[in-house]
Length: 245
Image 1 (cartoon, helix red, strand yellow):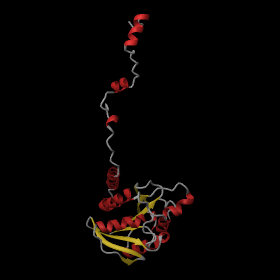
Image 2 (cartoon, one colour):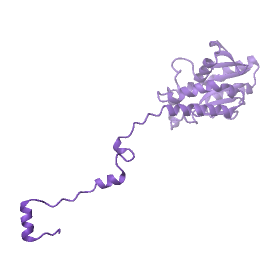
Image 3 (cartoon, one colour):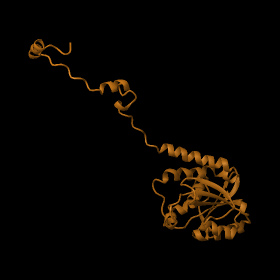
Image 4 (spheres, one colour):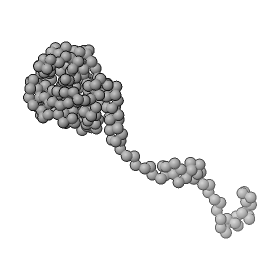
């Protein structure tokens, strides 16, 4: 059995926050694979299903982010699971928006949800790090992670969550490179579909523009004035002679 824990904060106030992308990923998996309805257990919300023929428990701790490990630890003890049976889905400031990395063990990197999980489960579990970007100033981090994703973020967020759900079996099966490649392709295709269509250039700006560049250069030259013609001019030429002939 595998336990997938998405990290976030409970309540409508937080549901669209960057800090809640772990909850969002867990919801996407549950929808995509027709897991059971969410129910309350282990101080969190759980949904049960199967992936690749194996039983999987999805967990969203309702203990708030800083105490996420309390709910995760309770579920692991109940099912007698080891850290290698646990995947934690969480937001990552140190990755650009839409970038994803998989990590096993190591430091919590200052993430309070992981810090809590470490204290209750050890640190040898797997992490799916979902990049949300960094505001650029440490003093702005708190408000940034507790701020909502922007409308522009949905251009990469929705395809990414769908791809995580579609290919999560690869992640659980240890096929990390294949899993990450699938996510990269999904977000790249989404980027391409968001590119605005280019309007055709006006005829004068197209290749040749109706004229070759040489012809354009010629027509841009100043045309010399033509000598005047008429009876008076003819009489003056007879009297004084012509300079041009």
